[in-house]
Amino acid sequence: MRSSDRLLEILETLGSVEAMTLTQLAHRVDLTAPTVLRLLRALEERAWVARLPSGAYTVGPQLLAAAGKALQRDPLIAAAQIALEKLRAELDETVSLTVAADIQRVCLIELESSQQLRFVHGVGTVGPLAAGASGKVLLAFSEPKLLDRVCHGPLEIYTEATPDADDLRRQCADARKQGWAISSGERSRGACAIAVPLISPLTRAVYALTVFAPEARATADSRREWLAALQRTRDDIIHQLVPDQTGVSTP
Image (tube, rainbow, N blue to C red; front, side, top):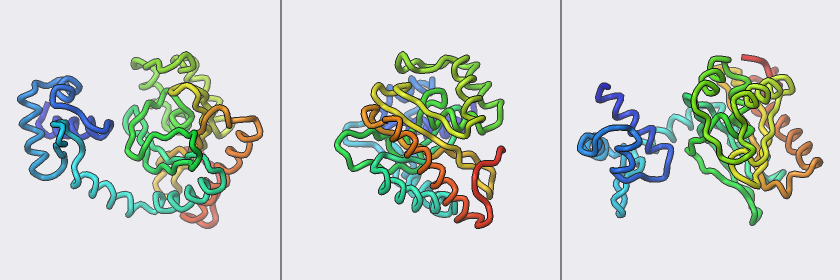
């Protein structure tokens, strides 16, 4: 493996968690601790990673600044931020925008519910594509080879509701047919989520707009309300980017 690949793997790994010790990181990337330490020192010199007082490592300010600037330049992200703020105010549930990254999903925007009982993940959090409504939407509206890759790999079981490969394929087919996906307790017990696809009219990239909340508030009426609100939000974002276009079109 080239040094550049090792550096990128370290950054990707640190980006998926809050922090990691040297030992944990070396185990995750399958390198010796001295090799990882040498690479971390090089990244730390340029502020791409930072060392915490505890001795653990996390992503550094240079990486965060670069990511923030990139997101600010993306017109879809800017439009989604405004639209999701309105959606959160309307529903007072946690809402998010996610995108697939390799065989995982990454949270780009998350706005928390103000209610005491709520579910949150955090911006930059990496999660599975195989569990949860947002992952199923991303798989359903991306190229079929992505779903094949996910189903052929080992699928982590989070709860008794986490789908296996056959269930995942069936649920993704349903999501593509109906234009939305729902999950209940697939990754976190007691959590419910509904997601719709947002396909950029500018780049054709596939995103997921999601509402997630405690199952206790996910009544049949609430789910219908959330779905309708997500669809309106998706159409508002697309209208901001291309005024004469709304709705979902297949990639």
